[in-house]
Image (cartoon, rainbow, N blue to C red; front, side, top):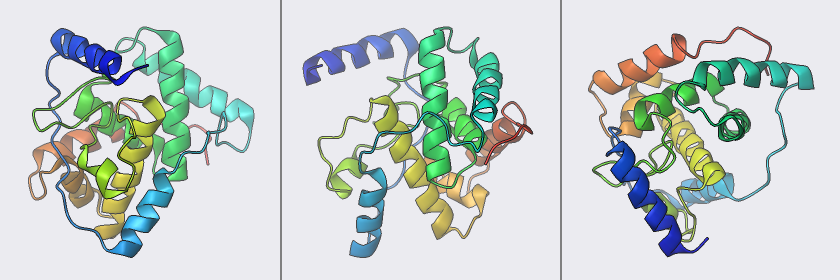
Amino acid sequence: MTFAARAGIAVTALCAWGIALGGAQQYVPLADSVRATLTSAVSDRAPPVFQFERAEDGHRWVFEMSRRLASRMPDRARRIGLLKTIQYESTRAGLDPQLVLGVIEVESAFRKYAVSSAGARGYMQVMPFWTKLLNRPNDNLFHLRTNIRYGCVILRHYLDIEKGDYFRALGRYNGSLGQRAYPDKVLRAWRGHWHYDGPRN
């Protein structure tokens, strides 16, 4: 698909759904070693189907999350594709998949082509400066796996900076460090609507 076609789809989506309410990560210069680590983390590799010890556990997780997401995303194929990508990319980044679902719920309300007033893009509302910062200027942040991978890598980066403090890491992710509204919303979504006790890694 050409850039013009993708842009047209994005504009159409914005007209239909409105501007995303998510905030924006802040540009902060990175040490060369940190940039190299993050660049490596977003490098493109095809995901496997599941990241579970047993395939049936993966199917159970997708079935349960799909049931919860159905009213927000009626298209089953898109829903399953999103959930499999979230499960893989979050596990790869050392994040709870349900946390990532909570972030997406608050950031974009599960709208693939959402754009915030600050210019953050896609499901996880990733700021475009990240593609330049990580020397990957041609990455398309509206592409499903690219968007989820960037979002997970960035959130993991902020969690590492904040030594595992979810409240502060989420504030950094949203560009609202020190304010309660955004982290509280994500934590409520994660521990409430997306809480899952079933088997997973």
